[in-house]
Length: 390
Ligand code: NAD
Ligand code: MG
Image 1: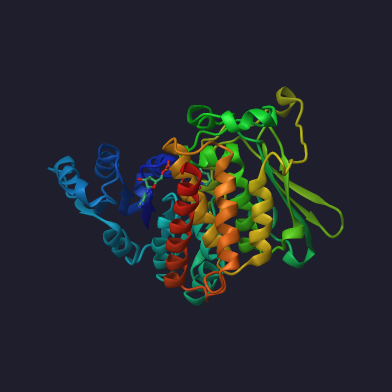
Image 2: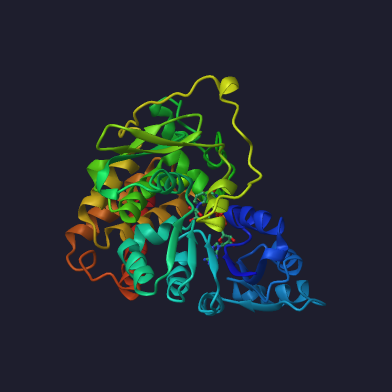
């Protein structure tokens, strides 16, 4: 029996993780499941998987969670501190699938217990990549990528010497607006941005795919996870989303990872690693698919990619600024305060302002400093938004 924690259990990645675990419940001892507003789902899964504790991030929903868990042995808890406490319990495997910077602290706490952290929360690596890797090393914990591109790179690297890697190519579907005329992008609505051509994911990452902020985050994630430089990492538009990443070696060989766009592959790989086990994902019929297509991304259409390159060059806490500004801009777009293309303008404003002001970005990478920079970047983004509104 492996003891497991699932952070962000009610989300898209969390539900896919539960789907896999539910297929072999006798193999897992579920300790904590966490969620936020979806109390009904959280309680149902906690009861079904016989979790020790179910935690909502939202304090005011504790009475609802208690009521939903009545008659079961599952303990109800609420708040960021309760999530943090659950992360300090010794487990063998943790899924980090909270969305946003809120996933960083529980992920770090889990790494401090040793064990394996399956990392879907890309914000952790964007905000504090070096800290995550150092913490894993210091506590002999294992960090496994769950983002599909990074899982693909990780798999292409099995048995290889990382020193022989020339380049890493991560693919992008191009999102909802890949074929739109560029001049129409400012008019893109929330509904239009919230539907992905190939993947079924949470709303925030779906919008980030349309703006290419998701790929921008993944560029930074690739640099941090695999220690590659910005020049070594390429983005390739691949509308079919079947090749997730490719690794190019010094002898010219290119190893591609091909699979259906189903997160249960990357989650299952991290769940069973270092073994491969049967997974309930579609098998590709390449003769029927017949063709795969590729094109270079246009940085004028997707300024997020250019901004990510700048962040990679600057390093240090620039990633935490980038992420916080992006989260704030995304909130504003979801709330209807700014247009689709203004998200990148706000992020660029914040990066410019905070790079010019000395101190913040150059601070040592500790959890406290990342939290402080995150806070200042959100305030700076709010001012940039107010400037636009006024
Ligand atoms: P989602 O929005 O579907 O789910 C997010 C989860 O986080 C939910 O359980 C929610 O209750 C919880 N949550 C939200 N705010 C929280 C807070 N402040 N504190 C604690 N918990 C909170 O998101 P998702 O699409 O499952 O993505 C989760 C993470 O995985 C993100 O970092 C995303 O970028 C990454 N990711 C997702 C996919 C995918 O296919 N969905 C693929 C690759 C990477
Ligand atoms: Mg991805």
